[in-house]
Image (tube, rainbow, N blue to C red; front, side, top):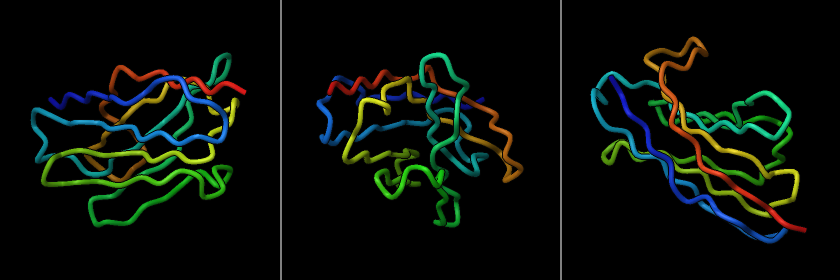
Length: 118
């Protein structure tokens, strides 16, 4: 079992930056990819960025380079640096982890709220 705990959410003004953190605990030796996802009010949850255990990353194209995912395997943590935030980035941000690269996420955190005001 793997537990994920997000932190770093809050209220920001448009144009600002925020860094989210996710700490993994439990059976972390089995973790493969880790990711950040977002649920915008009234919409489904989208995976924004993935950090694979080989160091590679992938992003949702619509982010247009504003977000950067990074991973610290020694600390079993994954981060999301968010720049040039816009009101449409408001939502609940979730950390996810998977045992495999098949795109199915085995574990989810509770989420952290990010609110961007105009």
